[in-house]
Image (cartoon, rainbow, N blue to C red; front, top):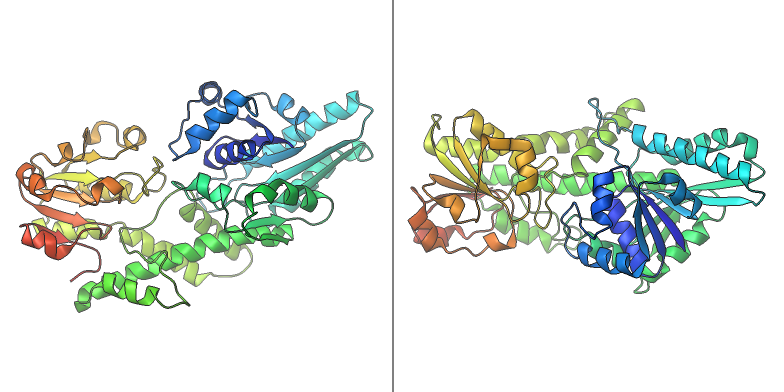
Length: 447
């Protein structure tokens, strides 16, 4: 099939590369000329395991193309995926201005094609961006209005196909999905999308077909529920500390309950990223606009904002309120392992709070330092290695649980640090082991 991907962020680039990987002809379009010029050479602007390999493979095979030309993209594609940013506005609403602007541009292009051609034109416009419920209907209304004079000649079907890609595991998630959700209201789009996704569901993953509004709601509901599990465990962790219980033992025990399961129960310094914060704020706003106060969803967000500062309170309690000139080493800056994404990362809140207290920060992250420099500039120092960050440090704060941080050389760490104090924001270390080695250890929800 001939596919267009509008937008080459995480979702767009992964989607385009994976569709090309199974034999489709894919054109990825973006207005960012610098990004597209790099992609034409196989150079990615994001870090995502496994993505660079399939981008280069399909780029050089000719199945994957990159362009800034929207006219060329629309003219040469039958199926058009909208993978555009929908950031939060100040009031929490999703900002759909970029999405709707592109929709209007596509309509103008289709009008021009219709004026020049005598043939019937059929396009499938698929919304893959996370958008408020009812957006597909608005896109359809916009298309119908813009193409009113050519309705006998041009047919555009609009569908919703939300993405469920975890950063750091996005390629695997796309190639081997848990499920594929398709939102259609009528027409041929269901058949086209079923055929398109057939190579990815051969092992039995279901294709779930529903109306567009339900499909749009699925993504928000899934993200809010997963965020709720983490925020709930963070509250339980804070209570465990007060009561002398160990949240890690509690987490493991309840995870064996088949009704609960073990995933998304890990307490820590809070969640971040491009999806959870944005989607939860949008869900809250959708409730408000429809006369509903989503109390649980509101609490999920509020608990997470407080949790980001928990580790700062532990540091203040250990050293006292005067932290001026204390040197703090930070391991991990991205919002989760296996990505360089720092959007809404807990590290931003934690580091900014520590800077307010006068601490000196030296940070290390395997891939996120270039993005961190855009945020912090020269307010903090950037280490060349995890051990380099520890030199003369008064404490280590672990924020992101990268694999290389899990089994460090603790004896060597002691020789580097001024005082061997560890604030483990992800509970990846054994408190008893660190105590035996002479460290002072603070975790999340541990006595």
